[in-house]
Length: 357
Image (cartoon, rainbow, N blue to C red):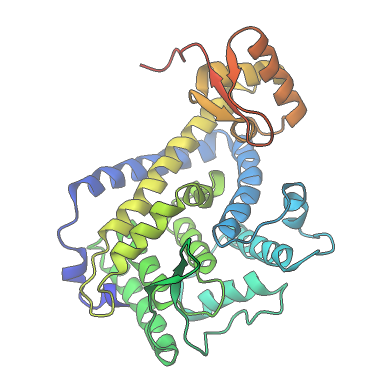
């Protein structure tokens, strides 16, 4: 709510670098809508794959992890018997995200909508899903020596309902006013949501669901085709640092939204770049057999170093054994080198990509 109490102060003096990022994201959004008309089946394949990645990454940020071999089945409409609470939380998040992706008429995010997302997220556990907190919580970091550092103290729990209602109203008023770019307003909304910390458990995941909700509602559909959550997971130190910087002085209304806003916009701009690359790779892979498609991607589209998971995301529908067979063949030809082995093995291209400067 604090970010919307004095919009003139909050949204003034935007760093010029953010204007560049906004243009990149808006350009990506335009291409996304064009691709949805041109290659709908390719995008449906990307969406199926991205869903499991997003569920896995958003939970992993909070330390909720499941065995990779069970992730897809746990994210299905009829998950197997749960082995532990982590699997229940994983499946619940899958339910909530699936509901967002299927909803063609997303409503504005008021308090009831946010609590509905939270309820779905924890519906498979014995947690208090769909309820505002009734005790104090805090945002802390456990240090290597075993001590705890308090990063941020949310407002008292008795103020939660009023603050959350005020946040939703302020966000809506700002969007309808049209004086602030929707993504800037969204960044401020998510920042305040995390500062209020309205529920006892699952605030980070709730904020990421709310982010996806608004990206889809505002026609920034990249979250369907590229896992924004995976990018956050891969940069989670920067994620926490940006939040900490932007929440400093929040209680007094003296904070700045720009560190967090820049982080979020950069994630979205990079996600759109990745999306465009995946569409290009997918179009190229529609011809030729599976190993030829992998070869074309690895030598012409891939970054200089990549993992099997990168190949899997770029060329949906190709099995891991086929991927490994193709990569080993290119290794034997002196085109690739294996930098490591095992699940996290990295491959390095030995010859320059013709498309690279």
